[in-house]
Length: 253
Image 1: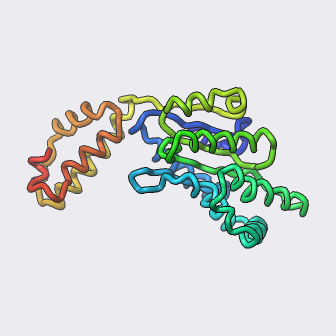
Image 2 (image 1 turned 90 degrees about the vertical axis):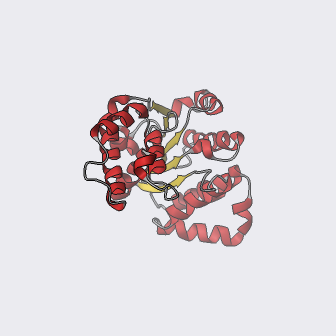
Image 3 (image 1 turned 135 degrees about the vertical axis):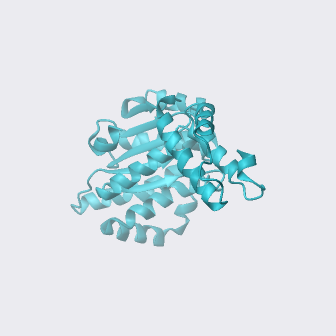
């Protein structure tokens, strides 16, 4: 992805990576996090996930501030003092959290002549954050900080195309600072899906001591066609075939 190479230099400060379930938004977010971390440009990454019970919006800014503090000592010292003076910050509304955890400390750093270079914050699975209102509030807070020049961050936000998020990102206050990229369902990644299925089923075959020729190429081809360019479908296939409660992966296939 082009943005993945020049994100911190982008004229937009919010990059919205959107698309339906199963088009590898999470994988892309993880790859971006790894890439920016190697460049020392990653401030923090937060991955919402309802199945893993990581959907509470109250943990977003606190987690981001903690991660960034671990990489920036001057900020960490201010943050420690801020929370010591008011431990209830972590329970306040998101607007107040953001102000006390980021805006105020950054203003204090500026008065001390501590320059802050642009760095990236990644939020994946925003649509899995509990409550549509909270999801919109998060974007509004971030966009306001960009327009007011109170934070130095570039934000990568990944989510599905929920109507309330589409409306939020299209709003006059947010669209000028946002670049949008949509991941489409496409069978152009069939080669990747073929390799993934071949490798994963080979592991299952070895585990259950199945024939060397298992599965047949014809079976792989049919599964790739059924996947229709969706990795989420492919993952489901592998989980079903490898179900430890089943008697035989061959029968499952």
